[in-house]
Length: 105
Image (cartoon, helix red, strand yellow):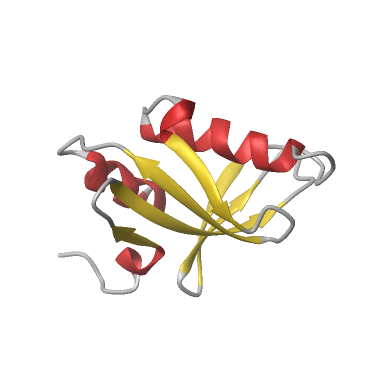
């Protein structure tokens, strides 16, 4: 059984999921740190200049979720640590891959 707090960081949509993410730029390695309130906390190994941290975040999520980077879209928070990323993917196991982000930070 999944705790209710775990699923708070993503919401289903008609095109896939919306992910609520808290980003910490400038880390030595890009990695999931767990939950930060109702958001997934991700440290990214890029500086927050000229979209580098956003690009690293999307590339990391694409690898972690096994989706093409073109399936990910930053919908809000381009200049903020609080971001919302849309995942346009209908794979039946995508929810399991999202839950695995928190289960194996």
